[in-house]
Structures are given as structure tokens and as C-alpha cells.
Image (tube, rainbow, N blue to C red):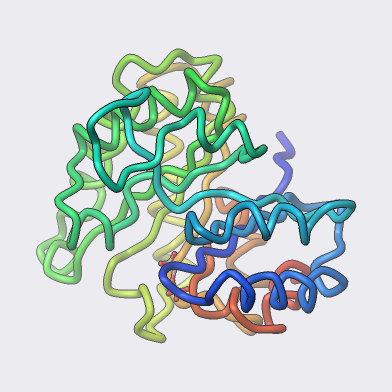
Length: 249
Ligand code: PGA
């Protein structure tokens, strides 16, 4: 089964809208590669100018978060149809920073995943263990639970189009990249979990990224593992280095 790689930048809370446009223009020629899906998930206020700046290129602009209601009294939140109205096709759901600082839970992740699919937006669903969990040997159990809850009431047809990002929390922004073996082991376990929930065809179709301190140096080995279909990249997606990550081959 050959799956198209998906390499996404997660800009987090970085760059003003004008800086974001300048960065898209700088990175555009460096990430021109139709063999992979290239996505930049950017702060909400920069989505529209970035979509304008990316026009005519292979860059997709995604959101970093989204709410699970259609509209109403939810001050500060962004509704799914606000994203689709401006052409957003991807949204990061349940990043560990949102779980840690903004009280997101497996249940809210599931609600958001359902809403994203209802609106035809591809969710990039994040999961990952803490250092403590890894040291206690419960990594796979913990991630299986995150995945099972995230996919409650999601059909196989929907699940096939989802993207899962495995991001060990201890590797995010720390410079401590997981070893290729660690990353492959967990991504393979996630695929087994998807096969158990649905079937092998769904497990073969779903794309699983690795994230956590990916650099141009670590990308080639990570992205050629059998169960790793690309990456979710934070720090290095704000630099020209991201071009090398997209062209890892
Ligand atoms: P990092 O971030 O590449 O800076 O570790 C990854 C992420 O949080 O998605």
C-alpha cells in the first residue's frame, strides 16, 4: 500500500500576519514538490493572508484548532464553517499543548474530529505520551486509548482520510527526537489499533505522521519507515530548513 506522504508545519503562536505572508513567499519555492502533501497550519488570524500568498503553489493552509459547535455564544472560538468558507482543508486537533494549557481532553478531541469530518475538513489528530508514561512502560496502552476515543462514531470511510500525528510530548520543542525505532514502533501500533477498530483496508489507508523535533537531518530516516507517512513539524517549519524536510528523499 503506498500512501502519499503528508508533511505539515505547525507554526503555533508565531509570526504576525505580515511576517507569515513573507515566510510563505520565502518557503514557496523551497517546498515545491507535488510528490508530498505540504500543509502549513498557521494562527487563525494569518489563515486568510496565507491562503492568498500560497495561491498557485502546492501549499495548503490549515488551522491549528477549531471549535466543535456550529455557531453561537462561544467567545473567542472559530467555527468549522468559518474555516471552510475561506478554503481551509486541514485542522490540527488535540495538539498536546492544547491538551496541557487549554484543557482539551480525549472527549473534546472526538467532538472536534466529528465536526471536522461533517464539514469536509481533514483532521490531523495528535496523540503522544509523556516522559513519565514512557518510563512506566504504558506508552502503547495510553496511545491506544487516545486513538479509540478520538475515533468514536467516526466511520471507516471518514477514518481512511484522517491524518494521525504521533508526537511524544518529551520530544516536542526539546531537540530530543524519538529514535527511528521508537517512532516506527508506536506508529505501527497505531495502525494495528485502527485495524482493530475498523479493518485492514482502513488501517492501510490512514496516514500517520511523526512529530517532535523533526529536522532536515532526522527526516529522511523517519519518513522512510514503513508506518511513518510524513511529519508534523514545529520549530523547523518556520525556517528554510523546512524545504529540506519536504524534499527529504
Ligand atoms: P517541534 O514541534 O517540531 O518544534 O518539536 C512539533 C509539534 O509540536 O507539532
